[in-house]
Amino acid sequence: MKEGIHPEYKVATITCACGTTFQTRSTRGSFHVDICSGCHPFFTGRQRYVDTAGRVEKFQKKYGRVKRNA
Image 1: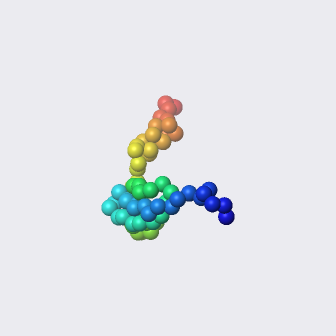
Image 2: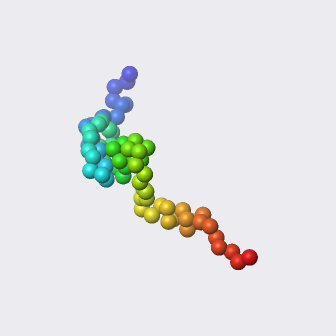
Image 3: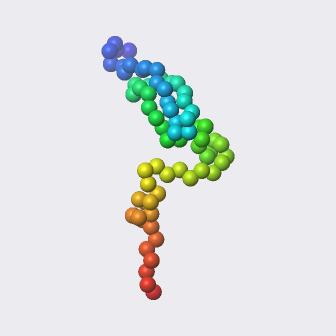
């Protein structure tokens, strides 16, 4: 492999909104996530309504059902 063309992988701390933290390696560095395997409904079996920054309301406003008079 050529020298000097590969990114540098640093130790990164990933922090979830639920409070879970874990360490991995990343070119980006440390960052925060909204959902992780510790709180995701698929892995926990518990239903949870996940809405980030009003995306559901934005979708319903754009594509929602329109009331029409018959």
